[in-house]
Length: 520
Ligand SMILES: [Zn+2]
Image 1 (cartoon, rainbow, N blue to C red):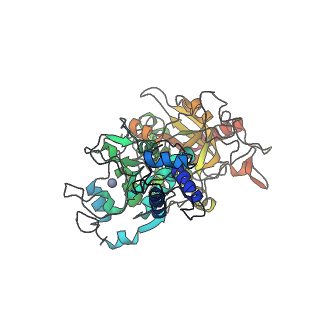
Image 2 (image 1 turned 60 degrees about the vertical axis):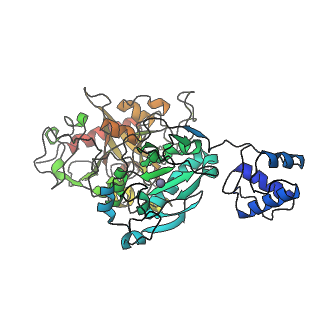
Image 3 (image 1 turned 135 degrees about the horizontal axis):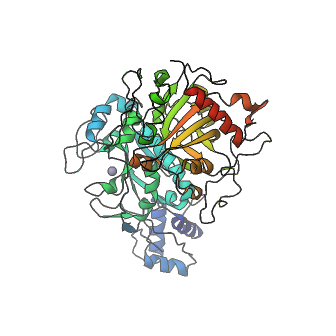
């Protein structure tokens, strides 16, 4: 059993607390699993009673005596144990540069060595103290909200890790030790984590096991891990430069991966949206240019949607409007995003491939067929829409709704494009918006959609996460025809459509053909 002392959390601490209760040394209703002041006092009392060194540390000698008195130790994984830091941990992400931070936030306060007061009025106003699940922190509100989402996701997969994680703080106006730069803690966009009684010191080439287990959740939320700093700081995570620009820049800035060169349209539209370069990935230049009939002169950029997680950095969200000749449709949404796998609606979490088990599998989808049955991710090409604010308690940080604001709803039809390789014809897939997903995320699609688009390993749930599309410099393009599904909804049942897989393709072809044939 590991050594327990002040500050340690876990099921083994709870077992120790129950033992102290049985010895009438601890008065608590329920053991909370946190080795705090009362547990310390009770431990010292136990040690005094038994002639042990009264240091409040539950080490081998104390455990041995306690076992003679009926204590049954509980083994937990030692998440504080040190392990090697793998490579590629921050793929596609950059640390938040001081220049970025100062230009977006301004000076946070004084460049002190210890924590000092936030003197920046706006930052002070946006700094909150809230629970993020395992503990309370003080930090910049959008960072705190994201941290809470990260722990919610991590808790579903790694409950023991989230149960034991502790923080060494978030907001703290100060300089980086040994430099004249503000630490990103000064803006409240970084957090320090640890397991067990002590933090893993800076400069050590290892990380605690628990931190390694949390790292993927931070990465997919686009936080940069300090294990990648020149001076390894493995307890530190911060909102990446890319994410900060997107969130603090209000989404109005064009966020570009560090080494990203925007491809030019082969045939630029004659009347592009003023001041906004249209970015098309390599495979799309020949199929989605104005020369191919895509009505770019009808497109307006809606950068507020670029704040959705999963959007390809450097891309913009467009809406084509004043379209004519499409059945029941006058506008279409255009965006480039990741494509992660959804196998909802299929028979079981393992049905495609017994070697793949999807723990997030649900046998229902938001949209049903005409008989009320869920769609099947292996049969129906469907894309997932983010939940509207009215449908979730997740704070969307001012992101607009797809349904309420844009009018894009489940049952609507769209067309998607992708090319995995660097040459050859892109793949095309007509799809239906068939399911709803996390409120702030975009870019999930059914296995069938991935197979049609030629995403490798789709059946095994290996779609393309945001880090991969960033590394490839191209995302999956969607054109969603707003309102196209309404005529096919079953009267009185807005979650049922009469369109089957064949119907989706027929309608999609008709819509896309008319979309590319606008009067000039
Ligand atoms: Zn830190």
